Length: 511
Image (cartoon, one colour):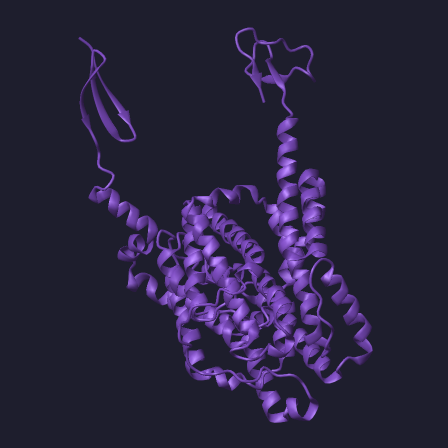
C-alpha cells in the first residue's frame, strides 16, 4: 500500500493507491489570510502599532516642519507650471500626502508636487483653456486640471488592481532620466514668459516647444525690465543660498529655507514698493483662505485628456517606483510595486475631489526627510514626517495664504528654474553611457529628442516603443560564450578566445 500527500495552492490532497482519500482545504478566507490582505492594502496597520512616539516623534516633527516649509514655495511655484492658481499648489501639498500615509508601502518616499508632472498637467490645461482664465479660482484651467488628474488616478488604480506594476521593469533608468531631463527643458521654456515679462502666443502639438522658444526670442526686445530685474535677483539669491547650504549643510542644524525666505522677502518688497501698480509687475493675486469643499470633476472632456492622463499615470509611477526601489535597496527591504500604484492612485483621487493636480514622489522632499532622520533605524517608515509637513501647509492655507497676494510671479518662476539644476546635471549621463553602454546611450538620446520634439505624451510613447524594440533586438541576437575548463584548475575560459582550453565532455557551460 502506498500513500502520499500532494500540496496544491496550499490545499492538501491525501492519496492512496491512486485514489483520493480526503481533501483538506486551507481556507483563503481564514483570519490570518484576511489580516495579511488588509495589512497589505493598508501598510499603516503594520508599522503604526510599532511606532514609538518617544523615540521617533521629535525627529519626525522636525523633519516634517522642514519639508512643510519647502512645500509652501514649491507648491505655489509648481502650480505656475501646471497653469493653475498658486493656492492649488498648497492644496496639492496637503491632501495627497495624508492619503499616502495610509496606503504607501515605501518607508522613505515623500510625495508632493513634482516638476515633470506639473509641466505635463500645464501642457494640457494650456491646450484646452485660454490664458485669460489662468488665475481665476474656478476658471477653465482649474476644471481641466482636475479632470485630467481624476482620470489619471483612475488609470493608476485600474493598473494597480490588475497587477500592472511589472511595467516598471521596462522603464529603464536611462529612459526615465532622459525623459525627465527633456521635461525640464519644457519647464524652463514655459517659464521664460514670466522671467522676461512677455506674452508670447500659445502653441500645442509637435514642435510646440521649438515654436515657443522662437516666439520668445523674437519678443526679447520687448522684455519688461522691472520683471527681468526681479527674476534675475531672485535667481542669483537662490543659487547663492543653495550653494551655501551645500557647502555648510553638515554644520547647520537645519538647511536654510531659502525658497521660503525668498518668497517672504519678495512679497514684502512688492507690497511696500507697490511693484504691481507702480511698475506693472505681474503678481499672484487673490489667494483665498480656507479649504475648498469636495466636488466631483466634470466628465465632459475625459476623451480629450485620456491620452495625456495615461502618460501621467505611467510617468508618475515610474518616477515614484524608481525612487522607492533606490531607497529600498539601500536599506534592505522591498517595495510592493502594485501597492504603490494603488497608493498613488488613491492619493491623487482624493486630491482630485479637492482641486489638486497630479503628484508623485519627490526626490527633494524624500532626501530632506531622510537627512533630518539619518540616525534612526528604518524599520519604521518616515510617513509621520509627511503628516507634520501637511499640518504646516494646512496652517498656511487656513491663515497665511492671503498674505502672499502681492508675490511677483517672477519669483515663483525663478524658484522653478533654480530647482531644475539637479535635472540638468543628468546631461552628464551622455558621457557616462558613452563609456559604459552604447545601447542605453541610444535609448537616452532617442527619448530626449523625441520628448523635446513630440511633446511629453507622444515623446513618452515613442520612447517606450523604442526601448522595447531594443529589448526585442537584443533577445533575438544574444551574445554568449561556451566555456572550457583549464586542465588541473578550477578556472573556466572562453573557448573562442582560448583555443587551447579543451571542451568539457559531460556538460556544456554557457555564459
